[in-house]
Structure formats: C-alpha cells, structure tokens
Length: 500
Ligand SMILES: *[C@@H]1O[C@H](CO)[C@@H](O)[C@H](O)[C@H]1NC(C)=O
Ligand SMILES: *[C@@H]1O[C@H](CO)[C@@H](O)[C@H](O)[C@H]1NC(C)=O
Ligand SMILES: *[C@@H]1O[C@H](CO)[C@@H](O)[C@H](O)[C@H]1NC(C)=O
Ligand SMILES: *[C@@H]1O[C@H](CO)[C@@H](O)[C@H](O)[C@H]1NC(C)=O
Ligand SMILES: *[C@@H]1O[C@H](CO)[C@@H](O)[C@H](O)[C@H]1NC(C)=O
Image (cartoon, rainbow, N blue to C red; front, side, top):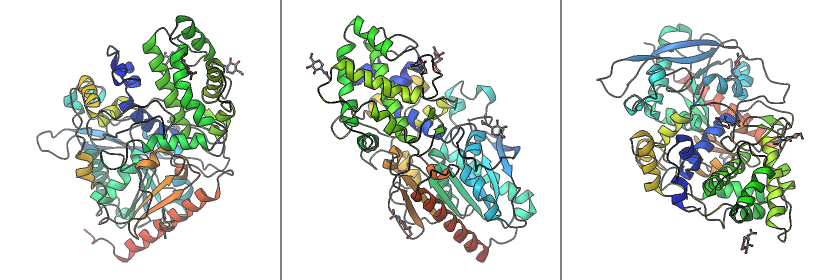
C-alpha cells in the first residue's frame, strides 16, 4: 500500500477515516475503550445503581473571554460510602458515553464496599451528553476549540472541588483517580497536574508515551504480531502473506467478486480502492482481536470466544505451499470468528469493526490536535504491509477534515514526556498482550510511580469485572492495586488537607 492510496477518496469523511492509517490507531484506541463495555459472562457482577447528576462547567477554564457554561454529566454511587471522610474513586471519563464506562468498570464496583468508597464517574466534555455547545458542538472548529485534555482535566478538578464544597461529609475524603486507555492517560495526568485534588491514580493500559519521539512507531504492531505468532502454527506468517494474496486476487474483476463472496461482504468490492479499504478493515480486525484477547467469553467490540486469537489461528494453520485462494479462505474463516461468533451476521460490513457508537469524530479531533500517536509497520518485525509514519500526510488530512493541524510535540511538553519521576502515587498497569502496552509505562520509575504488568492480559483487563477464568497475574494485579489505594488513603488520613 502506497501512502497516496490511502487518500484517494476524499469525498466521504468515512472513507478518509477508514483509509487513513494515521487514523487507524485512533480507531483502535477508540475501540479499546469500547472494549470494556458489554456483558461479561461472569455471574459475580454486582448490580449497578447510580444517580445521574449534572454540573455547570465553564466552557473555557484556560482563558477568560468565553464565560459560558455547559452541563457536564456525572454519575454517583454512594451505597458503600463511609461517612464522613470515606474515599472517593473518581473515574476520569474517556471519549464516550460515561454510562458505558461506568457499567463496565467492574473493578470499581467490586472494591467499593471493602474500601467504603463513593464511586463517581465523570463524563469527558464533548462526549455522551456533555456537549459544551449542545448539538452544535461539532458544527465548526470554533466550537471544537475547547475539546482538549487540559480542559477535561480542569472539568474534573472543578467538579471535585465543588462536590467537596457542597458535601460536608466529603470534605476530608481522599480522592483516587481511575481510568483505562485514554481515560487512564487522563487519570495519570490528573494526579500529575492536580496533586492537590487527587491523592493517587490508577492508569490502566494508558499509552502516555505513544507520542512522537517517545517510543518506536513500530512497537504497537509488533505486539499485535507477537500475539498471533504465539497463538498458532504459521499464524502471523500467513497473515503477512495474505496482503499480497489479496493484491493478486483483487487485480481482476472475477477475483474481486470471489473475494466479496468468500468473505460474505455486505457490499461487493468493485475496484482497487475498495481492496485497499478491505485490507485496512482486516488489519483493524487483527488489532482489535489483540486488544480483546481475554481468557473468557466476552462481548465488547464483538461477542467472542475465550482466547479468541487461538480460535482465529486455527483457521490460519496452513502450510506455506497453499494457494492464494486457500490462504484467503482461511483468512475469511478467521475473520468470521470475530464477526460471526454468534452465527447471527448475515454479511460482513467493511465499514465496521466494532459495535457501539462512541464519539469517533471527537476523538479524531483530539488526534488531529494534541493526541498525535505515530504508528508504522515494516512487514518484517510485524505481519502488516510496510507503511511509514508520515506526519505531513496526517497533518494534511487533519487540515482537510477540521481546518486545524496537529501539534506533534505539545503532549510531551504539557505532560512531561519521559521525564515524570518527580510525580508520585500513580499505578501504570499494562497487559503484555495489549498493543497499547507499547506506549505505556512498563517499568517502575520510583517507589510511588509503579508499573504492574499482567503478562497474559489484554487491554485493561484489570478494570473489568473479575471472572472465574481470570488468570493469577490479573488477580494479583487487582490485589496490588487495592493495596496501593489503601496506602494512599492512609497517607491522606495522616496529612489531611486543612479545613476551609
Ligand atoms: C448502564 O446500566 C444502567 C443500569 O443498569 C442502564 O440503565 C443503562 O442503560 C446502562 N448503559 C449502557 C450504555 O449500557
Ligand atoms: C502473487 O502473484 C505473484 C506473481 O504471480 C506470485 O509470485 C506470488 O507468489 C503471489 N503471491 C502470493 C502471496 O501468493
Ligand atoms: C454466520 O454463521 C451462521 C451460522 O453458522 C451462518 O448461517 C451464516 O451464513 C454466517 N454468516 C456469515 C456472514 O458468514
Ligand atoms: C455498514 O456500516 C456502516 C457504518 O456503520 C453503515 O452506515 C451501513 O449501513 C452498514 N451497511 C450494512 C449493509 O449493514
Ligand atoms: C514494581 O514494583 C512493585 C513493588 O515492588 C512490584 O510489585 C512490581 O512487580 C514492579 N513492576 C515491575 C514492572 O517490575
């Protein structure tokens, strides 16, 4: 795939989004966040019950000209809260409907009682119901200008201060930030920027170093590839070969038709551009599988069997001598594990890789401004077609979509890049199977900036409800997380903030 091919069809935004590899990881990140939603097969899930509240937030915390406000949604569950002064676990909402994250961060619901904690889930501005300009929030880039992580962190800080001010029993309550994926990045940054507001943070699968110059751009796809390599005979090798097989087969009209039928595509492939989109869709499918390779049957992006990559790889255990058609038959069977596990799909839709309806457009805007995350592939250390990271092409795409250009170095400047040792009380948890671990903190930085690795864990497995099939490392990770929470809480009790 040549860089130019990704941008052939500028007519439709959806085409740009799915054809742009620079955006692909953005889609992937989005989908990770989605991944925590959806039912778990565990029967131990605690029933969820919360109150939905709204808070008048400043549209612009960081400047003084725009003085308007909007309603930020947040959810509160205080059933187990020990008053006064019991801790508050505060979920720093990601780019989506906060009720989804709330319903699917089982870990918080499971530990609320033992910690005597209140749970708060705060929605991120511009997502779900928290729209600074109502339905017009996305209508032009003037309105989108206030969609930044710094503004979102300020929302969280002001919300907590207000809760403490209006709830006497909460005045001395230590607050711990919790988040996964982008929400995990926010949890970590929240502790860094507002140590006066939160005593510590759990940043689960938070790729805070997936920014320019911090980690090699190819590491993400290397992890995806390793997941497939360890899950079955020739699995990664056959996926690596499949791209050329698709190029070969799709070079004729009859080949395109064969592919469309073999993969039961909803819309048949008609030309070379369609074939490029098809390959991107498959690539995203493999990435998603790497993110949700959980040990038990689960339903996030899609309903999937336990250890889904092993199931996928059974269809790809083919010898190197097979024909293009035999190989692609295996690939189609493999893709259908992801898209048709329940047997209820009538066709595969190459415009979709995940169920759900988060604020994709919002995340694209964030990726096109502050959240620049370089990704690349070389086809040797990974199983994908070689594709360099092309900042200029990415920037041009952003300009075409939003009229803004990304600032590649800003995230590093504002959040400290690799130079964060002066901060404290942050847990960075990562799963070894999770491609986002490539941009995460996977070693201990200081005694209080700790990394918890879950070698056989996928994306923020630790934040999910516990499950009978959970392996020892994730059980251990959760126990360690609670241990740190308790330490931070007792530290806070020893040094309470002065009463106002
Ligand atoms: C979250 O759970 C609540 C209560 O069980 C339910 O009403 C709501 O629809 C759920 N939200 C989502 C997005 O699943
Ligand atoms: C694609 O076609 C070329 C030329 O016909 C052939 O050499 C190559 O082996 C084919 N690729 C695959 C993956 O089958
Ligand atoms: C999905 O599985 C069902 C049951 O095996 C099958 O009838 C259906 O054709 C499959 N759909 C696709 C798109 O392959
Ligand atoms: C495929 O997905 C797209 C994007 O979600 C949707 O608009 C379209 O209707 C779907 N097509 C079919 C045939 O389901
Ligand atoms: C970091 O230190 C903690 C506490 O000693 C330990 O449990 C954990 O395994 C260490 N993490 C890594 C990645 O070595």
